[in-house]
Image (cartoon, rainbow, N blue to C red; front, side, top):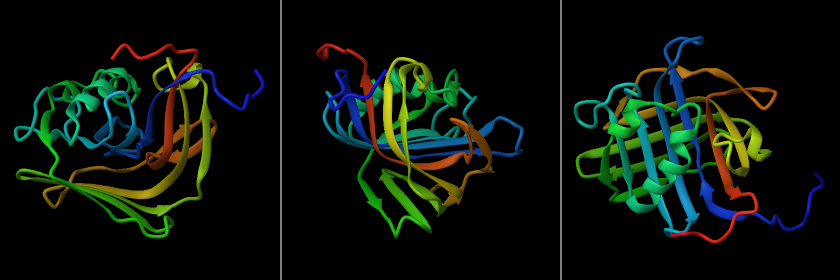
Length: 211
């Protein structure tokens, strides 16, 4: 289908959605997962959040396991987790996602540089500080994903990606285990840590929100 100047679909949400997926061995499963959201448009307003699963397959929340979410808009994030994150292949079926503890965000500090060397997001909640750090960044990569190829298989997605050759997830100053590995990303070999800016999810031919 040829491109059209105005997409006829419904914009569901738009913002930023970088992630860090870590492994203990290159061919093994993910051992530590984190994803950040800065949503500027949604039917439930704006908001920011960090989801950290330090024990993705354990049905436990913080502090029994390092599974938690820090957010300043819980209603929005419950909607996004139900409709998007829980359907992403990396998070699909993870017991830690359903069991994670929800914490109210007190502050968010972004530390961008020139977007070539280092980028970080720091979120604080009562008794918890989450640091997400991306380093050695690649060039921006524009991405357009059809419904059939998207992570949810229900939405189109448009974004600007930058891969990070190294990354860390810190919880109260302690780095969670694992390292950045390689994965296939639409015909390219890219790392499992990435920035994602101007990310917009669209329901093709979607009607008005029921919210």
